[in-house]
Image (cartoon, rainbow, N blue to C red; front, side, top):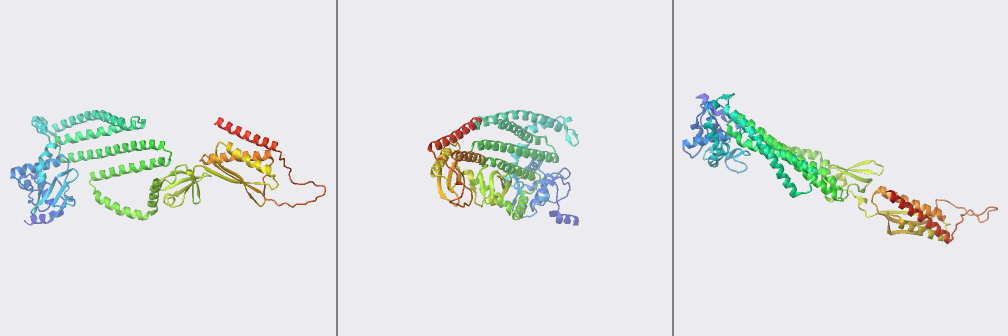
Length: 546
């Protein structure tokens, strides 16, 4: 008597497995754990008392209750659902947090229709469980299973390592059928995927066709697993075998689904990359690898969570812990979070594109790459600047890559003793050179005498180059400046430089030091035509070489 009282007192703190074989345990229905233990314990081979197990069924006759209780256990065993007693609550007033009622679901994900509910002061299998158990049983053990069992000869009922011969033969037949289903479903899956691809994109690339072939393989494997999973419980292996088999099947399904979604991501990214190639904005091209990493990360993360659930890890607790740890990590890495937000803002606002020439504070150069954390800019001296995206999203950016044209403005200083006729001819010649230049806007330029400086006559040259590329701009400047120098040489125009001149009106036996200028109109016209002709010939030659 004392021993029994001690056992009852310690019962809530003891974890019982589904294969517990103790006898003489009293029926206890005061909490979910006691009810499930009473049900499963009295259906074990060494403690088989179905009348006591039937006490967990409410409102039925003893005969019907016995059948229902046995079927509940057979359904759990057939699906390989191992009941861990340590995880079942012992609180008599336990409430389901989702339904907010007095009920406990053993396997919310895999078998939600089998659960307990509190009736008056005791816990019993729910009314829904009693109504659905026959359908669940028939789905796991179809009618033909019982028919096959009745036809099995006595020799087939012999056992090897506690496994019947008929079970071994049935497993071999099931494996052959499963492989046959795999071969057929693979061809069907590829045919269907090909039809879908033809409707979505008739001119699909070779890359997409390869992905479709890869997709047909895991899809057919999923069909094969579904077939095997449906038929295997009919072989009636024991709980431990079923538990391991269904665990491996769940892992395999999760891995295959991860693979399928990764391939779908590959198709999406490949299609998007083809679209970005047609757009002028090269920032979209930079978004392709970032988007690829992001989508793949989501698929793998969700897949890992699914695997953790399969292995019995409490994902809710894990997420809660990760949230607290994530908050601490975020506080410790505020700069990283700011840079990530800055990256998002750059892709939303699009203040520049890849290969744009920008000026940001002290940094001037070409945008080469936009990453998660920073943007890479190559300066004119080919050095690399890494600017954090948080800073780049806040400072003023002068995007010279968005200019319609590249402006060129310079001042030419002529000597003060240059005759006005030559100045006019020189200015007119520069205008003609700009008009003849293939890389300049011939409809928008200014060449004027704008000032009388300290030591020179200031001629302003303001014009625009068509090409936005930096190297092309420098080449165009070179051609323009060379042509201007040649024009000055032919006309005899000199450029001034900072000097001081002392004028002596009378100097014995010395002629005047000032240069002599030829202002003959015919000679000026010939010199200008000569320079322009050479300039046009050089441009035509460079075009033909290209």
